[in-house]
Image 1: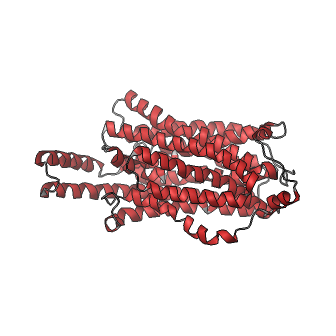
Image 2: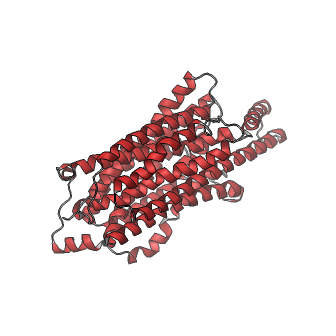
Length: 457
């Protein structure tokens, strides 16, 4: 959700023009603050959530985590400053990070038979990408329907309504919560008094040390590709929209005319404002249209992973099927069409490219949902999954976002004469994608192959 609305939301909250150097730099900087800051916060609490999941049960933690992120997203729609948006994105990420750990442990233990468990985990996680499609659809609808929706802080802007739509998952949960069963494996061990106390220190015992470090590092590579490259696409697309020069010119005319008249209700000022808003909406519609392709790629990638997971025994081979093509294809997507180097085909090729990028990267998140329950015992499952996802993925992997937005993109913009602002982001994304995919491909050689059954207590 945040990558889709970051540019218009921060432009409004900061009061800057995203098509100027100052506005562009400020938006990128705050994007980095929010993306990494919320991930650090979520990852920290996610670690605690993993412990709580093992200590107090999967169902209870799962329900509360969903409620936290849903109502945080609702509140974020009413943000009045970048700092307020940052805080509420942090609480949203707390819910998301805890929910992932609790949900995977819960589902894995509801279906103990290995083949069925692989299928259920794979296809259930595949449907999480439906959420991404729904968010994009909500954004496109909000762009079209914003004038007819209730005003928020006196304005009708699509990004606020998109954030508010995040409360939707909580509504059915309130109804079905009493009927959700607890994990049978966890409950039986707790009832019999044989449930061991989880401890982070146990993750670094000889039996689990290699698994802990390698899975955390590979998780970091997956999140690095997502946050440091793919999720920057909505910041790049506006530079490829043909109407961009016209929008920049109109916005300058609007600001100049408004300053001269000193009256925002002047007929000429209002006419220019309406034309600017019309072009902005058209630009955001193109952004949403490209995002749909990425979400579709992610959805099909998750389904492909689910189908392959019950047919390929080697987990290393399964992961490499997505990593090796990504090492080649994803950097090319950001070096050429995303950077505007193919003028007549940029948007068309970018749509195809982000589809493949979503397919190859998002599928890896489903891989971990299938893999991790098989390499940790019941009492340590939530803690182990939490360490890999939150320390490796959220804390380390998402650091690729500020590396791209705060370090690489501004450096490239200053170093390469005549480089367009969106192209600087695209080149930074290409570099980060190549680096994390290369590291991930090498790390698969040390990924432990799990046995046919989950690790016994």
